[in-house]
Amino acid sequence: MSNAETITVPHLGTSTIGYKLGRAYDGSLPTLVMVNSFTTSVEQYRPQFADEALTATANLLAIEPYGHGQTRASYEQFTYWDSAIANLQVLDALEIPEAFVLGTSQGGWIAARMAILAPGAVKGIIPLGTSMDFE
Image (cartoon, rainbow, N blue to C red; front, side):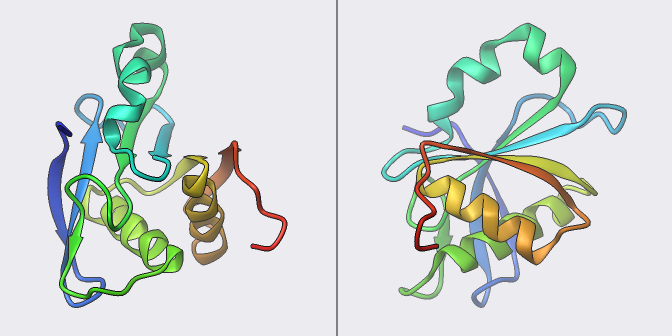
């Protein structure tokens, strides 16, 4: 079971997005958004949230894509582009102006789309185990 909190964003006629912030946001630290792989939740990043050296170095924010964890939309159909837009709206709602985005597997596809949609806010991407040969 995910221990994600939820936040409401306007995308797809209002969506509830599951997320986990490692600790209170600190604007003096860089932010690393982590997007989980298929069939997982923010729990995928439990080791990173438990790493005190890492959490002292960066804000950690895991966001669950549509169809995963606590994330829900009023639409039955959605795409990776929709998850990217919703994730950017989560950043806005949490007042996080910029971030690096790490995406595992399908999360990498979402990370790349976030960078395409908001190059000023996404400072870099880290796609892990991601195939982007046709994406």
